[in-house]
Image 1 (tube, helix red, strand yellow):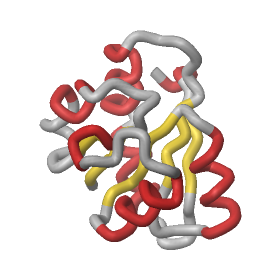
Image 2 (tube, one colour):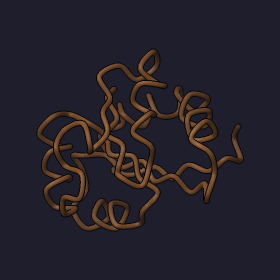
Image 3 (cartoon, helix red, strand yellow):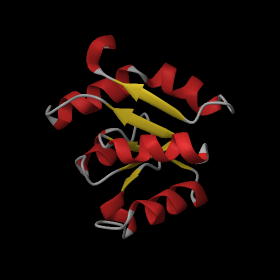
Image 4 (cartoon, one colour):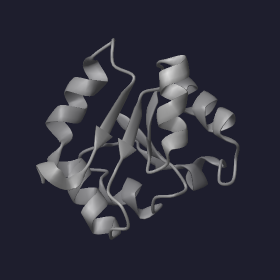
Length: 114
């Protein structure tokens, strides 16, 4: 299960979570920093990533288009990168189930399950 972190998240997350989500990247690392959402969406689907964003844009796109790719919408507010990493690490079982569920297109995460 590979995650692609949107530009509104730290590029450090891919490295910090490599033990749990190997092969994950940040849009910066794949040449998509500043790219339009449709291009990021296309890249994410083509390379078997799930997009992780704090933005509602990808959530709305998933409602309109379904998956792939799957969207993880982080509803965490302004928190440190370590808090984002903690949520993604602690919610790994739920994210694995989400990844395996062919009927699901998006998942909203907040810090209520930490």
